[in-house]
Length: 275
Image (cartoon, rainbow, N blue to C red; front, side, top):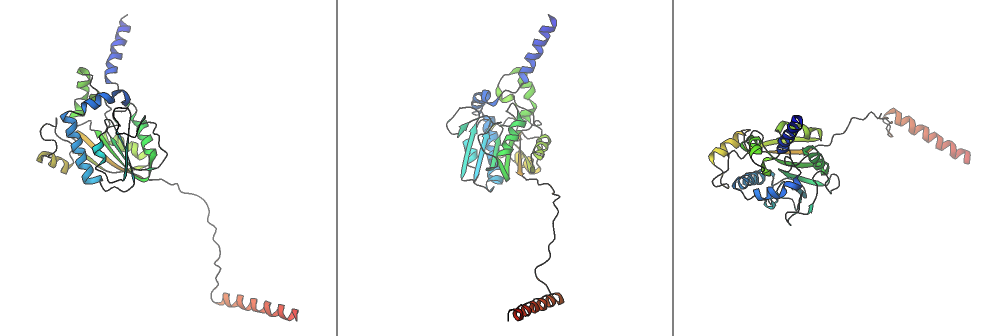
């Protein structure tokens, strides 16, 4: 009897820390998107998009977001910009799908934006592998992830004990961990930017304070969000096929003179025999 009650307590406790599928938490995250903190996070990310990623090459841009911010797509210069979502919460998305099973062929997208969809997914590895599949060789990947060492990531476990709100149920993905995953998927990380260093994001979220400017200039790794920019590199193995060297068709020097004299004698001999 005691063992059964103990197991129930443990299961209830672990259920509080479990990350559900994005399709089930999308509605709660959409309500959270009207908060001041989320507005502050999105404004910081759009500032980085405009300054660093607006001139990325390519024609197609695909966005996968936990909430789905259509204004973030306007920060990029690709002509064909579209977004998928895990739940039918709006009409601005192209399709509703599971992020681990994208309805896209392999290697057709130039730029992919993952805006907090990785840590809020139940299986981040599957989502990242599927996203990397649709990126073409030489394509770019931009990941926005909540920092486990930031304020929002630091209070996550405490808030999970006292609250059931979905914004506190996400995977703590460290920067080095994602860099290792990307290296296994043939991606080279170009840079990592830490942003949104305010704890709560109160005040004017569109104006960057001197404190934030100083933290971003030094790239202090304690912001609420870090952004990874990576590019896909195709790896080709070293073949062992032997190369056969053929002689040049042209002859130079004495060798060419000897060949010309021999061919001239054969022509003269054939003419005399015909006569």
